[in-house]
Image: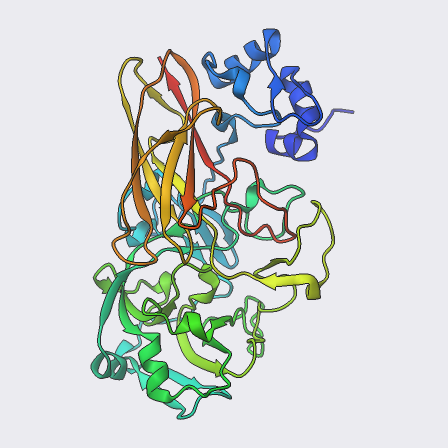
Length: 438
């Protein structure tokens, strides 16, 4: 009987310390995050990554080298060259980090997150697409066509960052249900539309209003017309922010079909699940919205930290709000080679939900020391921020570049994974890439 081959992610997912011992002979003592990697183990890891590892003594135990942690898939989507398809029913795809280097995310580089089957919109007249505003706390219910929205309200164009709540899910263990996003379920295009606040005020918001929710034209993957694939919302205060939009445009063009054509919500800084695509209805609720994927464990995390693998009851889960501080390295591409003696430019983006990022640092010695990076201000509130750093590698070998952002309240990205949760949400651990210097 032959032994089943096991991938490195599965091996480390089961028992990181055991995987270290099996692969490299590295032993991590209890209470220490550093492993002792030397001799034949160091030689084995160096051979696996293709170069000597100058800062091996600082490499945390149980860490898969970034050069071995990359994943690739063979699927493609028309107009989305280079994206990795994670699921085709419904369609979901992420963007490799190095393809997110643009300051403004182009349509062809924006991740795709669907909960149902998109509606057929090829032959419609978008100007007559209707959006109803209703709900228990709506004083004057109305239906607006897209033409009426465009002609009756001031237009606004804002660069707003969207990120799937499950971005980074692949790193959690035990594995969490859902699309196994790595780092690419994020983007920051320029959206054009009208303020949600202006439309809500035109219809009247009652004093007892609690939530603002959406319904959309996408269909449940089962084909059952009585089921909604997703219908989520946000507290009234978030809906009334200046940056919350009913949008019909992206980067100066009509919304692409995969991104909500002809009209959608864009609620920057929160999980992308609240930015409903193919918008048909806005509900002003007198309670926390109870639509599809608002209850149970959907887009919720334990109200109190739990041990990995713990079963958590629905009543002990809290709804995700503002996304946590996070950053991404978009240049160089992980796995790139650099010439010894040349300064390497490293750059990327950072964001922090409802807050600004206040500081950005990088490390090339597995977090033993950190260097300040240049951080730009956002072009408007809730846009991501560009950062860059000049990195000088002290000798040839294998390196990992780590990036860490700190928000305006002083909260930093964790170097290791944050609290485990049953659905694998809100992973904001430091992004890291592999670089060989020769």
